[in-house]
Length: 139
Image (tube, rainbow, N blue to C red; front, side, top):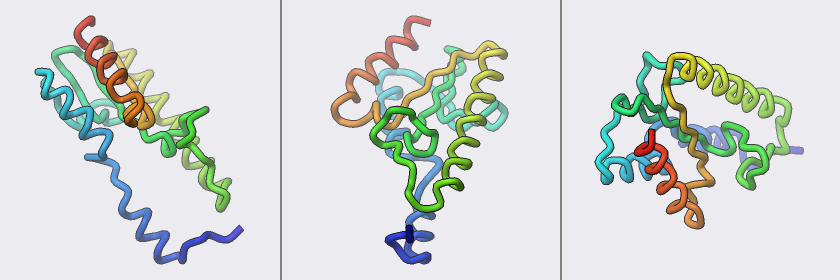
């Protein structure tokens, strides 16, 4: 099956996808700051370069895009119909890297919290942020 976009259009669209400062990440960061939590961003010295690091709580937060990190059972994780094998390899590699980073962090004594993009959509955002705050204050 051919792509619905030209190669140039697809390339442009893909180049616009960010790995840092995404809308879900900014939403969580604003919430944490507003609630008095101070954090560091994308600490390279930690496995997986977590999106948010709260040293005081020895906690890291990964904010995963449902598509890019293969959120099973999620309506936002749809395997593309073109170059399917390539995409499955790419997403599978991301899932493996996530698991390795999480295991290394846990072994080093860090608490790891994963927030999925779909959990920050309008219907669930309040519940997600409330549970995030609860998990941080009850460490």
